[in-house]
Image (cartoon, rainbow, N blue to C red; front, side):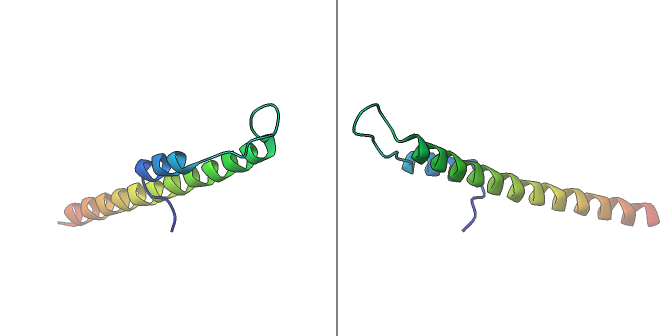
Length: 70
């Protein structure tokens, strides 16, 4: 299911975990994979919100057209 809200992003971040290296912290490749996944979640939320706002704009435009026609 695609992410739709900022809460979905927060939930994704809360669930993130990184593989540890034996020496020196975290596995950089794993961090990059996690960041790519996070970027996809952000994109999903953005696209969902963009579609929602476009629908509102289209609805507003339709109402204005009807009012102009009388």
